[in-house]
Image (cartoon, rainbow, N blue to C red; front, side):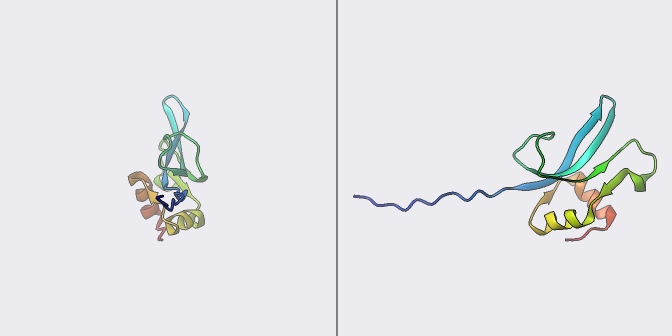
Length: 95
């Protein structure tokens, strides 16, 4: 008789900080969200971390981030997308 020990796979969640498109046609508006990286771009998010409005002319008001929550997600290992990484760097947020 072959006795094998089966381990349960841990339910690890791979989290990515990315943009979720909102708004209407020709008027984009994005939310910065923490989401499971296996989900769709506009799928369900874990948490909303801020927003980005590309049509505002003032660069400093285009992006609004919750600094403490972004730091938390970076601290637990969430990976930002290229665009969100640029926003984080511009805002001066560190891990």
